[in-house]
Every structure is written in C-alpha cells, then in structure tokens.
Amino acid sequence: MAAALTREGGEDAFRRLFRFYRQRDASDLRGVVDFSAPGGQVFKSQLSISSVSDQDAYRAGLRPVSQWKAYGLNGYPGFIFIPNPFLPGCQRHWVKQCLKLYTQKPNVCNLDLHMSPEKTVDLWGQSKEQLRRKGSSKWEPRSLLEKLRWVTLGYHYNWDTKPCIYQVSLLLGRLNKNLVIPFQSSQNHSWEREKKYSANHHTPFPSDLAFLSEQVAAACGFRGFQAQAGILNYYHFDSSLGIHVDESELDHSRPLLSFSFGQSSIFLLGGLKREEAPTAMFMHSGDIMVMSGFSRLLYHAVPRVLPNPEGTALPLCLDQGLPSDLPVGSVVEHSSDEDWHVCAKYLQSSRINMTIRQVLAEGQKFPEDSGTNGKGQALSEDSHHQENSRAKRHKPNTDS
Ligand code: SIN
Image: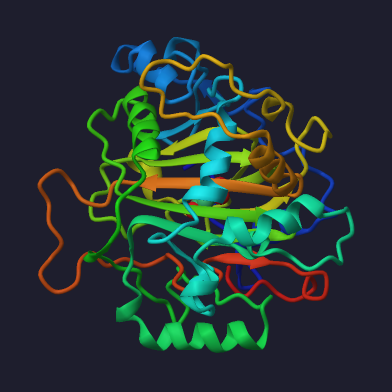
C-alpha cells in the first residue's frame, strides 16, 4: 500500500481522517478523489465487454458495457470504480425498490429491533403522506422511512445467536436514539463482536437486484457471481458509517458490489490495518464500486454525506423518467409519478447505498454449527451508522 502507517496520540490514521471528513465544516476537500474528473492515482481499468450482452445490460437498466468508464486506484488492486453507468431514468427504479419494495417483510430492518412487527410491515405506506407534505423545516418529525437505517436481504445476520449484544443495543437505543452501538472491528476493542450468516436465516433475494448485480460482476470479470446477501444503507446529511471490514462472507474470492443513489458521499478506502491512511473519494448518484481481490477485505467507511455537486435539490441524473418503451424482459419497471414524488422528496436530503455480496462459494455449505462467522459488521439497531444529531455532534465518535 502506498499509504503510510501512522498512529498519532493513540489515534490510528483511519480514524483521524474519518474525524476530519466527518466535520461538516471541513471545507478543504481537495484531497478527495473525484472520478468524474480523474487524475493522480487514478488509472483506466479494463472491463469484460463480451461478458454482458447489450440486451442484458439494457434489461438491468444499464448502458452497454462498451460505453462504461471504469477506473482503478494505484495501491488498491481489485478496486474498480464505475461512474454512473445507468441509462436515463433507470436509477429511479432502484431508488423506489429500496424505499417501497425491499423495505417490506420478510426483509429485516433496524426498526424491527424496537418496534412491533405490525408497525414495520408497511414503512412506505406509513411514511408517504408525511414525506409528500414535508417542508424544509428541520424540526418536523421524521417519518418511519426517514428513521430507517438499514435493510438486509437474502442471508441476514443471525440475531438469535447474539442475545447480549441485542439487548445492550435495545437498551441503549431506548435511552438515546442518537447513540449508536458502534460496530467494532479494531482488535483493541474488548467488545468486538461477530456477525454470522446462517442457513436458516434466509429470505429470497430480490430477483431484479440479483440480475443487476450479476451483470455488473460479469462486466468486472466475475461471471457466475451469485447475489446472496444485501445490505441497504440509508443516510441523511447527518449520517455516517463507521470504519469496518466486510469479512463475514465465507467466500472472499467473490467481489463486493456497491451502488449509490441520491446525494453524494465521501468514501474512505483504507488498508488491511487501521494505521494505514485511507484514500478519500466522492461517490455520486449512480456510481458503482467493486471491491475484489486484495481490496475485498480493506477497511472502509463513509464519514460524510454531502449535497450533490450540481447544487440542485436532486442530482441531475435523476431528473429524467424512464422512456415509455422498455426492452423485453426488463427488470426495471415504470413507477407512478406519485411514487417518484415521494422518492424524490426523500432523496433531497438522503443517500441510499446497496452493497451486494456472495456469501458461499459454488457448492459450499454453512458449517454444521452456525454458518459463517466474521468480525466487523454491525448487529445493532443502527448498524454501524453514526447519526450525528445537532446535539451530539461534538461527542466523540465511539465507533471508529
Ligand atoms: C457506502 O454506503 O458507500 C458503503 C456501505 C458499506 O460499506 O457497507
């Protein structure tokens, strides 16, 4: 890694930069890599154009792979950044799925941990009027959708094996909604915990999202990728995501795919150790990131969500609706104006990220006892999200 190994005053280099970028008034963002104007440590990356037919790309709402740009970063083999390869109008489909469909049962979300099942059964239905009417005041109560932090798809974490942490999380969640149970991945933390997937905590993975993921993975040289688990993260301008490694999957030879929609963010990609200073990069709406090979198990975090660079309420790439004629077999579907209006209102101050993983290698099974184990993913109500409320902003970030 090009990054220097540093630890100053007991604080590792990753945490130091996380804290730097988390400050809303950190106005010096010159060091943040922008793949829409690449330079410096960025180089062009090759894609496997023949692995995805134009027809399949269109069906997933993507441009033909021959039209995509793809970049790598010096010092991060296996990392691929693809600036918005979506066809006009198609991001809207994925945004609507993340808010309206994937939030439905049997998928699991943070709200399930402290609300009764009947209260979380229809987050969209319960929030849409409130969102539609929402003005610009920061003091209006948040709708359930705005309280949503994460949804899991496919293989979910095995909450049952973690009664103590679950209870601690619940208790603290009740005491203070802004205090997040930190996700711990540093060896120094005594309460580091495991995340486990298991064979019996599984619900069907959405077929449209599986199809999209398969096309993107194939274009990056990973034919036969199986989308088996997904984490959807929902951010607002006061959210961040703590420093972590995604290592719970049994098969690390398969990539981790990350899709972002709505407002922008700063993403930090570090090394195998937190003492390695991370590289900061912008992620804008429609951007896709692939972490594979050496980069599959690197520390990463999202210290900050920030307004899209165009300075408009919504990124311009979300302006357009879908064309009336969609290709045969398109997994992308039209949404009503009414639904899009709710999504647009939500996204004016929010960002949605979907990370998709293959958990098991072809033919692999979970070990008899429990499935995979792994450190470094959140089990708590707020996942590894940090919500920096106005009142709590000055508090140290306990997670990272
Ligand atoms: C992101 O929101 O860009 C990253 C999500 C993750 O690391 O899980």
